[in-house]
Each structure stands twice: as C-alpha cells, then as structure tokens.
Length: 308
Image 1 (cartoon, helix red, strand yellow):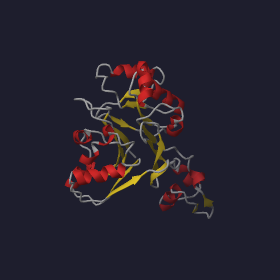
Image 2: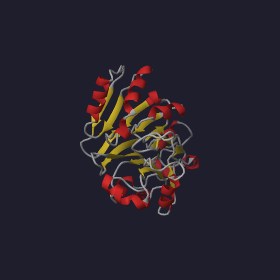
Image 3: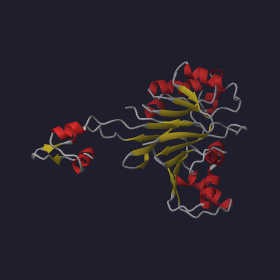
C-alpha cells in the first residue's frame, strides 16, 4: 500500500519566486490528506498533477496567514468538479470562523459539504480501520497543533507451506486465517492464525510539526516516525530570535528527531532570509545532530516505505 508525502510549499512568512508557503500533501493508496495550505498550494497541486478533488481532509496547524491563505482557493477549486463526498477541515479555535468568513466575503460558490471541526483537546480526530490521525499541542504565539498519521500493525507474513502441513487446503480457509480467524483443517483439528503466520508487522507513521518553540516533549508525540516533517526556520546563531518568535532552529528540529528515533527528518518552513544557496547552512547544522536529515523543496516527493 503506497504512502507518499508531497511538499507543496516549504517557506515561512512570505512566498518567494521558487518557494511557496508551507503545505504538505499525504497520499495513502489514493486518499489525500492536506496538512496546512499556505499561499501557492494550488500551483504545486497542478504542477504535480495531483487529483486535488480527492482531498478527504485538511489538517490546519494554526491560523497564521502563511499556513491558511491557500485554503480558500482549494475550496473554490473543488467546486469546479463533481464532488459527492464532504471535505473535512480540522484545526484550532477560529478555523471555523476563518472558513465561514472566507466563504461569505469572497461569495464562494460551494456545491459540496464542508465539515469544519475545531479541536478542543489533543487526541485522535480522524480514524479508519487501518490508521488514525492525531493532534497534539505545540507552543506558538497562538493556538497551534502538531499532527501524526499512524497506521495500525499489519498481520504477520502468511506461510502457505505451514498451512498445507496442517492440512488446510488452499482457498477460502487461507483468506480467513489471514484475516485473523480460526479454521477447521481437513483432519478436523482447529488451526489458528498464529500457527501459520509470523508476528504482526508495524505500520508507518508520518508527523508534521510547525510552528513551535522548541521543547523536548515534542519527541514523545512523533516518536518512531518513518517520516518527520518539522520546521527548521533559523540557523543556530539566530536561536534567540527563534525563542522570541516561538520558532525552532534546524538544529533543534534535529534534536527532536534524534530523541524520537525517527527514520528521516525533512526540514520545512524556512525563513525568507535564506535563499536557495544558503539553505545548506540549515541542513549542515541539522545533519551534525541527526544525519538522516533532508531539506524539503517545493514539489519534492518522499515515498514512506514499510520497514520489513
């Protein structure tokens, strides 16, 4: 089952000619989840040829302009096609006011249902049989949420030879075993899934953190992430400014990644003071702490693989 992260925008504060504002799209087996929607989100969606009309839900970190100004365009764009399913929007207090005001002031034509749910406490906000999406509090200049998508464990590997040895013939009984049911073998004995399958295999985890003051407990929320997208807005020499504005340096993002034992860290939400040439300073400082760090770039694609 495919799981991919698309960086739609990697900048903070203001867009640059080659850097839209922060937005990440997660595609899981054709289903799309958008995390923040800064200015320029539509442009990257089009250039990546993503099926934006299939966006199931939008998860908003906070209501600063550089994280939400692309959302009204997404709402209007979705009215240009036939859409039967509702669009869910989850976010902190006042996100509902922002969406409703935008609809009214811009006189939006909306031909589908928009369901906005403001988060009143941390925890799971979206859940299926296979995974859930959970939020947790960050520390910024206004209410701000971090997000994780976490898959549940998958069944262990099925061993056909063991099933045959236990007189379970190929066919529907194998499928029932793989779905966790006991079955009756040809000789009458009861065979359980544990008799023919390996131990459960871990699912995957994606985490998204921006904007926030550094604090070590973030690591508890993103622990074990296969792909961790985290703001690294400043270099170490501007840590005092980061504290004042309640943001993080790239080095601090790397410290969280190291403590949380994530597989890969992708920095995002760069200050516009860093051009394409000196972004490598952010990367160098982060990699000194956590080597498995990369720079997010607009329209970069990151497959998130199972660890077998």
